[in-house]
Length: 523
Image (tube, rainbow, N blue to C red; front, side, top):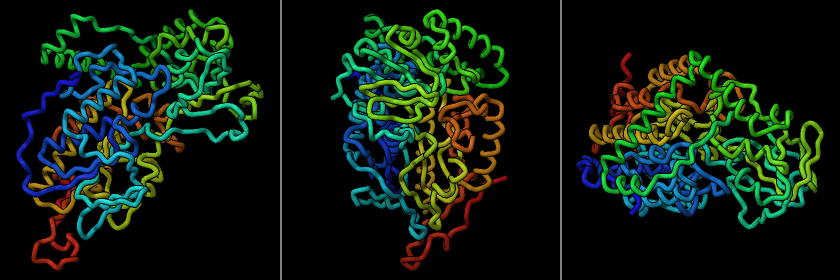
């Protein structure tokens, strides 16, 4: 058994009232929520998973070279530490297998409805319950709705003219067509982000000609290829405390990087940029390609990519880097914005995801019929990235402004799952019909968030998915992971508006709010 967990004997006492929960998505976030709620004694949990297996992005992204760019000992649950990772940075297949093991070991697998994509979620003001309906028309009514669909679950294809004319094979990196043989083919890869820098080195030896067309370059740093030795693996298997110590030490080593995203660290970033350009020029000799590979924005205002192979690969004779956008596609290849035609047998679109379109395409209606996507017309926002006014009993994982480039997202997901569990336990203890973050709490947090983001490089309007089309930073957490842990350590009832359950003597269809005094946030 690869996963060795430590939660077998820590299930909390059964809650006073039975609670039903629907979780949408079964990647890291969905599993974290299910495990935490199950520990609390909640058994009525339904997990909707649109695919046929768990794993989220690690199930979907099967492209050549797919791997994590965060060390696996911290890109895993702190209570399910795997002792035998094959490398410091785990591969896609290994992470997917890990998540499958976790689902089985913690008893989550039977709770999952596979091949069930959620279409709508509607809140009933009278009962305080959510009705979740799938695209197949099946529905469940639950007390709590947890949304764990992630930020990188919907591939983004550019709106390029003529794509339907192309006679070759064309697909997104997140929807890799393994039936296409790339041997001796002319391949065009569009994009040079996190997926592209793994795909390009992985396929370079097989193809006849490889051209990377990028709209904007990225900063790339070397990546450790360290492989754990047999002695280390044996010790990790034998001593649970050693796995925990390794996990904590590595987490803290990454945590100290947080100040690098603040404006005060500009001298350090400039020195780092100089060194990364120096490494680039060691491998790439063509001046035009060197110019195309150097970003014109600050280090860390976009994700810092890790690769030992990217620069050596684009320096090879049959690999070409073009700094331009794809304007259109014809029968035989792509046409760039600067007028070049590039012949292609295969086009691979490494063009990212619809990260700023949180929770789309699910239609979500809250209190009074409020539409979540209409409320978010100016950009997604949530209190702690977890809750939103007008949407009682609804919680999110990996919601707005909870992404990170300095440490592991799994740590944040664990904190969010714990916070949600505390909220649900409070609702049970007080026998509440609903819990909803107060407008004051929400607005105060948004003001803090905006001020904190202004002190980081994330607001430099650099290319990427951290900002939406209006220039609002919707993805990034602007403080340290430990700061987030402090903010979510304890659920605070005074920050929420609570409504009591309808008394047994009340008319059957009477709304719950007729029998309650809201618990409003303290100022």
